[in-house]
Every structure is written in C-alpha cells, then in structure tokens.
Amino acid sequence: MHSRSPLKLALSAALCGALLTTAACGGRGGGPKDTAFVARDVDTLYATAKDRLDRGDTLVAAALFDEVERQHPYSPWARRAQLMSAFSYYVAKDYNKSVQAAQRFLSIHPGNRDAPYAYYLISLCYYEQISDTDRDQKITMQALQTLNEVVRRYPNTRYAADARIKVDLVNDHLAGKEMQIGRYYEKSGKWLAASLRFRNVVETYQTTSHAPEALFRMVEANLALGAQAEALKYAAVLGANYPGSKWYEKAYKLMQKNAPGVAVK
Image 1: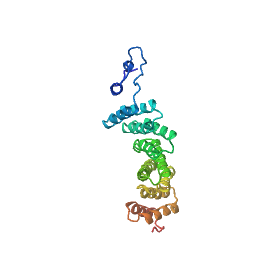
Image 2: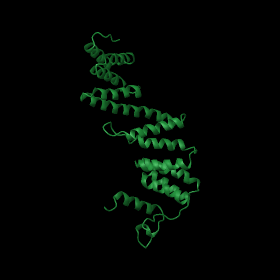
Image 3: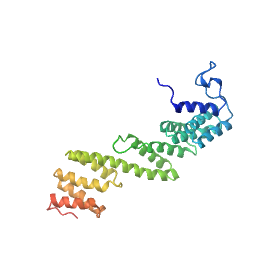
Image 4: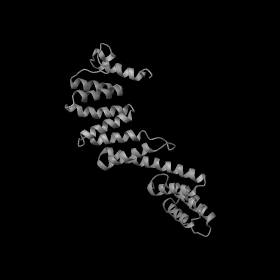
C-alpha cells in the first residue's frame, strides 16, 4: 500500500488541531490509531465545523459535522449537522458521500422542513457529474430522475423551479446523445437502427433543440428505406413546426429530389 496522501495527512492534522484530541491521534501511547476526537459540547463542536466550512476546509468541516451527530445524536444540532455534512461533501465535490449523507437525513427525518433541500442536493450531485455525450449516460439518467423527484414532491418550491430548468437541460443532453448515435448508424448505412434513434428524439425529446434535425433525419432515413409516405409525414411535421428552419429547407429539397411526384407543404 502507498503512504497516506497529503490530503489525508492534512485532514488528520486539521482534525487533531480543531479539537482537543487524545494522544492517540498520532497512533502513539498505546491508544487506538483511529481515535481522533474527545467529547466536546455541541455548541463548540458545531461552531468549529461551521468555521471550517466558512474557511473552505470542506472535507474537514464534513467530518466535524459528522462528529456532531456521533457525539450528540439527540441534540437539535444533530439534525442540522447531518444536512450540513451533506452540503460540505457537495462543495468538496465528494458527491457519493454527499448523496449518502442526504439520503441518511431523509431516512431519519422524511417530513422535516429541510427535506426539499436534501432531495435537491441529491439531484445536484448527479447533475454536476453529467459527462459529455461521448460517454455513458447513466449519471445523466440519475440526474433526470432525481430532478423530476424534486419537482414531483415539492412543485411550489424554489428548488422545483430550478429543477425544471435543469430537467430541460438534461433532456437536451440526452437527446444529443441519441442524435450522436443515430448519425453514427446513418453514416454506417444502418438506416433502420438510425431511424429508431431519431424517432426516439422526435417522440421523447420533442421540445429540445434537437427536434428539428431529428425530423429531417427521419425524412432521410425513410427515403433510404423506401418509405416515401413516412418520409412525407415527417417532412410535413417539420414544415408545420419549423417552417423557416434550415432543416425544413433541406427536407423539402430532399423530398423534391427523391420523390418528385409527392407534394410537400
């Protein structure tokens, strides 16, 4: 195993300095090596955690907030410390621990007034991990699911208002992934596979910025498959919804070239 990283060493040192730790903090004197805290009154402990957070020592702050709950589980501060721990991990970009902390808060306090924020924080953790369209979109789907959960549970909150905006952005991202795959199949001459991807965009992500191109690609794919009637249908939808777009102009020219006897409106 490698020696402990500088971050872990710094965290250990900061924890030892922030609290009146035992001599076993360094593993000497025969005490347990993981002994880092002694009992502190809850006000001082919470204030120390908050101070660390304000100073940007987010991982240290998270650990200290966890210690508030461990040492004073029945204190009113313990409930708040759980959520502050989740927030501290989020700011530190330790999204897995942030989600775990927020989920634990919700499991213990499902009806708490801060529950909407806990759900929202979970959704942010997934949202901020969304990768580009070249990668797997599992995290993107988790972001969409959790954002929709915020909207469903708390529709009239400010968290829901922001979640709705992010849902639109996530849907646009997912539509972009479908388009990318569809174009790949199209270039490979796999027209049926391509049309399935483009149709999914048309039917599932029809309000996104990718819808006009998806309709045009459906015209292309259906003409390549010899389905002129289907191509005409998608060209008509494109013309009705995006009459001045470049995609409609391209679809019109394509229909005139490949189906000259078919009228496109």
